Length: 586
Image (tube, rainbow, N blue to C red; front, side):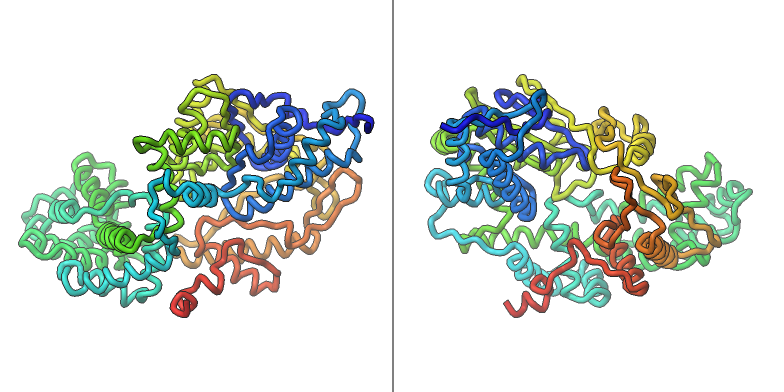
């Protein structure tokens, strides 16, 4: 018999009761992964749940690999017992019985159900094909490839058969090329959410027809008089000129012209420069809205309605072409017994909701006693339906532990939304679950967290997306220092000053060059980090992260960094085998 050893146990586990449903709400740097890996160990050690019965669901393959490595390392540390807790600190008492349970967990670790939601669904569908009503000859295919084939088939059909849409197709293909158009439409398809606002031909026609005609803008026209009276302090000449340029398009629509031909003319008009910095559409909307004239307010509203209804060429194709591609894709997959990566989620959700699903649910509940779902703010309705069916809807000793940051749900990744998160959270808490906020950051300086809480405090988030637990600093010794050794400002705001005629492309380039310049200065020693040991350490390129709103912005920053000879890497840059050329080879 080996003497028991007191191995350090994180205090946060005292706040988590795995006999109830648990909602862990985290912020960046608050130890989310650390908490999850130790919770798995807690379930094995203190609650005697075999590792194979603990389902851990992550959002990406990278997160899955990291979670597996960290859980395995935690179990090994417990088994080795080389770290001993202080007498008054929380600890696991590791005796021979606990060691045996941990050894068993490590022995079967390669079978531990730690995976992405897609991998979990694939495993269930494969191992329970009869219960899921799957055809044995069904074949999984790559979503990107089958979409590409369906896109090209539908594009050929649309060019031949959809004469009204043909002008928009010709514009898109001549502007972007077929490969680029396919890529853009696939991104819309992959998000699985409808475009907002959805394009509607009749809505666009009505919005154009509601604009002033040439007669309205003539010397005796009502709109001409309204503009003359209402634009007292605004450019009285340019706004009527721009509207007169639009009027022939309006007249043709009223005479029954094909809507897409009219939209092509409208888009050209909308992008024509009214000044060096404003296009026609933006110029007219700006000055009509800013005129402050109640008599011009209806016209200003009609301009806004037109901008939304007319959309853009790509918005039209998303609304017109993508639904046809999806129907063709569904028909192709049904005929050939194919399913793609994302179909698996819906297939499992349907199987769990189907009549006679009790056998499948019973089998899975015998297999898994508790599920830990990471990045829960990225969960969509279908995923929540799966977890709810398995671990929530039925009475019994099954538990669901979800962890996420609802603030991040604003990104709407792959159709995730804060409403799904809040509905799931309320359901779990309403069934007696417990909410545990992770509100101590171990990554940031006290000064930065104070500034962050000031910026995103009670007035920053509204409605469902709240910030009820401001993050506190768990490492007060951290400091960010300037070149002189003094505390550096935690947040810097850049105000770009320039002429009113600045264009967006110039602004984007200037900001990218500023970012590169700042990073260059940081790497040369303008900022250093003191981690509490009295030594100010230099910041290396891998310590710096640049977050961008779009891929185009990221590429702009990348070009500026390359020009400044600063080493950098794109986190999600398109790989060689994801390019159109590689797909043609495959």
